[in-house]
Image (cartoon, rainbow, N blue to C red; front, top):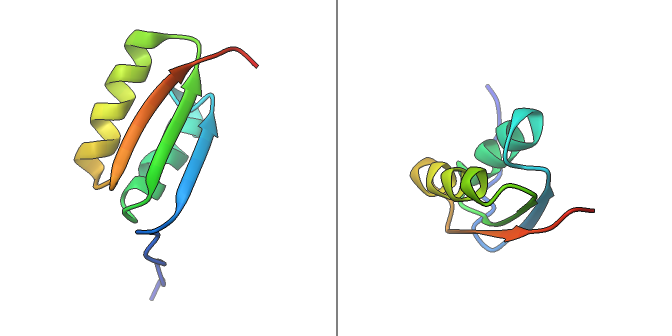
Length: 68
């Protein structure tokens, strides 16, 4: 049995979370009801990721365009 911690009051930031392993990790955290901020370069991918995160169960999700 796997224990999944509820992250309802957590705020989580993902750099490069619009694709690949970063997005997969963000979706997993979204399933635990966290507030998620994704930072990335592509606004279209960011908007799609925010929609995916909300569908997965995130308490809130937002995208900020940035290149670190």
